[in-house]
Image 1 (cartoon, rainbow, N blue to C red):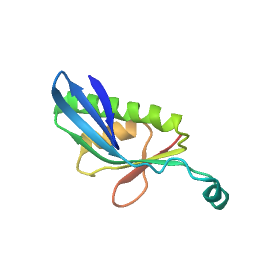
Image 2: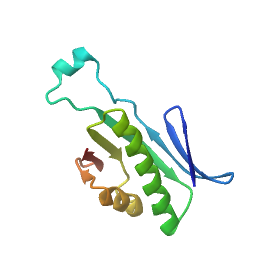
Image 3: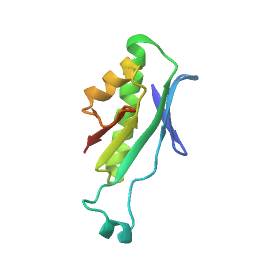
Amino acid sequence: MKFRFKDEYIVATRNEETLGWMWVGTAVGADLKQRRLLTPIRNEADIKEIVLFVTGEERARVAKKMIETFFVVALKKGATLVTANADADDEELVSVLKSFGFERTSIAYKMSKKL
């Protein structure tokens, strides 16, 4: 499985087949003026959407690998909080997010994890 970053997307591929993609936000890194106003300073990285074209166990495995890849990038950019939007009916994806320590933070099933 390979990952490539294009703009704000992480794309997972195998050979020429796209297995899934993630659309991520760029709210990591507040400027100095913003840092003085934020209490506490929290650089947020946002997983806006995850789309997976595979099913079953492979679907969960691809989601896990994409989120792991995203964490590496988010940590390098100084993120202290990662949020993810998930459909409450998507049990496989919610389960993967929970396995990383994400917790539900709203009725709309927005989840987050402090780093």
